[in-house]
Structures are given as structure tokens and as C-alpha cells.
Amino acid sequence: MIPDYTLEQVLKVVCDYYNVSKQDVVSEKKPKQIAKARQIYFYLGYELTKNSQAKVAEYINRYHACTIYSHNKTVIEMQIYKHIKKEIKEITVKLIGNIPFIPIDVNLLYITQNYF
Image: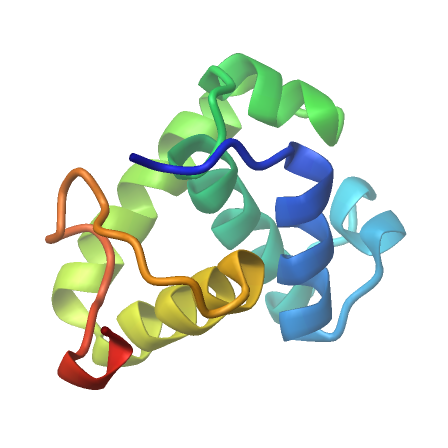
């Protein structure tokens, strides 16, 4: 069972991890680091909260299509690039405070043996 996190909690942890401000993520800025933080926020905001993709996007003044695109892109990137899985895992661990949980689809989140 996934704990009920808020979009604010997810956004804060993602911003801290990528060292960007919340204002940058909400803004129209498109530098690589900000765009990556925004993409991961969309993914985790949908996966770790009980919010719809539309609500996740609305929280940072975007359209739901942004969430759909970012979520799908992240799923594909996690299958190809190990560092993306590692980043998702590290952010998730920061969010849950090192309390282990088993995600519904273990292929979506990278879990190592020492994680349990």
C-alpha cells in the first residue's frame, strides 16, 4: 500500500534533490535541470499520491498532457537508463523517510536488496 503523500511533499523533495526552487519548477523556464525536476515531479506526483494526472499538472499550473507525457517518458527512461531508476529510488527514499514499502508495480521503482 502506498502512503498518501501530498503534492507539496513530493514537489519539495524533488526540488531539494535537484537543487532547484519551487518557483523554477512552476515557471516557464526550460533549462535541463529544471525540466528534469519537473518531469520527475510529474511522475512521482502521480505514482505516490492519490491525485489524478490532471491534479498533478494543475498544482504547478500545467495541462494534464504534460503529466501524461512526462510519466510515459520517465517509465521508458527507467527501462533504458539505470541512473534514472537510481534517482527515482533516492528521491522516493527521501520522501518516505527510509521506511520500506513494496510498490504495486515493482518494475516502476528500482529497489535494491539493501533497501529492505
